[in-house]
Length: 376
Image 1 (cartoon, rainbow, N blue to C red):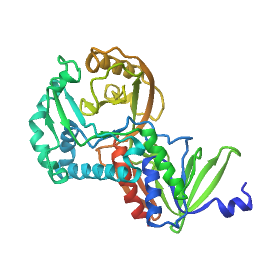
Image 2 (image 1 turned 60 degrees about the vertical axis):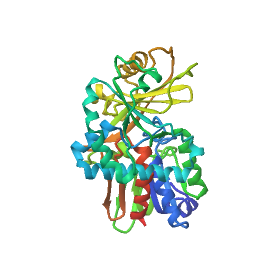
Image 3 (image 1 turned 120 degrees about the horizontal axis):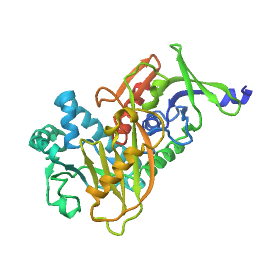
Image 4 (image 1 turned 180 degrees about the vertical axis):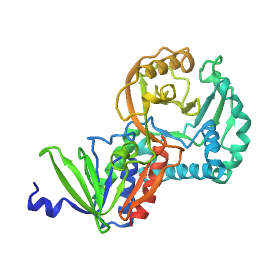
């Protein structure tokens, strides 16, 4: 039951965004930048953004050598280049909007650790560099095997290192707080703890039905346009869409007395990834050892994967440095038949911006910008 005042002031909007992650907030902010008088509501079912936006490892990257070569197999060079362009433009948009200092952006570079199984990929460095030349105007990938020793990695396991000077890292929490602060500054209303149950587009306006946790009843919001930015959880609102959730397990060590490397690192076609966070190591991935178990939206820790992450830290990444794990967590990403995001019109007044393929930090701001153009 709503009061007269609530019906007058709280339920009708020009635009409603479902999901307050990177894509959702970027969409709302982009609309406000183009149309300052727009009334915008962002609905978030969690107290914090629920999927991966506040739970990722803080990589500002666009794809390692092996990842891009795997994408080329599926998409071809033209579509892979277009995908990298979206990621790169998204990173530039994010940095310009938030500011490097406000999210601790650090350009230490990116590295890919190559084991015996990945060495054949090195033959294609020139091919990938040539593909990327229109975007970066210089070679992106090069080999520097001397860093195996200087970074302290196990040389019995790591046979080569590919360097990418264009990658960086961010503090995910500061990035999301900055986006939220900008949304508030622009008078964008954000309601957390508000789970959207369904929506209905009658061709003129969209009714968005959410759950009122206090009264245990439904509340209906109305808007001229709606954007669905719920990534891995989209199937609950839009059935039969090509989205599979992919859980990412992450750990962070306690501060180390000496850490011999800085930067963001990829292993095994991107299925493992680690970086420094000050003198700590953040290490995540491993879903490829249990695809079935990790195709889930449950926020739980897979002990088999945590054990493997600890083993690789001890045997490969920090073989000469004692460490203790300080904390573990899980985030939920979204994948499909390929790495291309789903960006389309769902109905007359509803647009989708979902399935970011584990690249939400990179592509999220760009997707929000494109969604705002469609909604306006």
